[in-house]
Length: 115
Image (cartoon, rainbow, N blue to C red):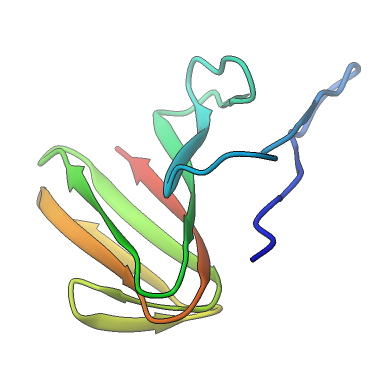
C-alpha cells in the first residue's frame, strides 16, 4: 500500500516540504503547535496525525477529557470503536477515554486531537 503522502505546509515566503516516506507508525504526528523535524507547526492547540493501517491491523488512541478528536477518512475502511467508516467519512469523539481503530482493508486517515 502506498502511504507516502507528501505534505506541504501553508507558508508566507520560504516554504518547506515534509516527507513521510518510510514512516511505519500507524499514527504518525505530522502537525503540532511547536512543530519539529518533519512536523508542521500550527498556531493552534491541535495535534494532527497521519493514520496508516494495513487490512486486519489496528491501533488505539487515548483522548484527554478536556480535548476532542476528529477522524477524517482518506481511503479504505475502518471500524472506529465498532462504527464503520469509509473514504470521505468523518467522526467526532468527545469526553475522553480510549478508542480503537481496526482496518477492514488498507486504510488512510487523519486524526485531529484538538481543544
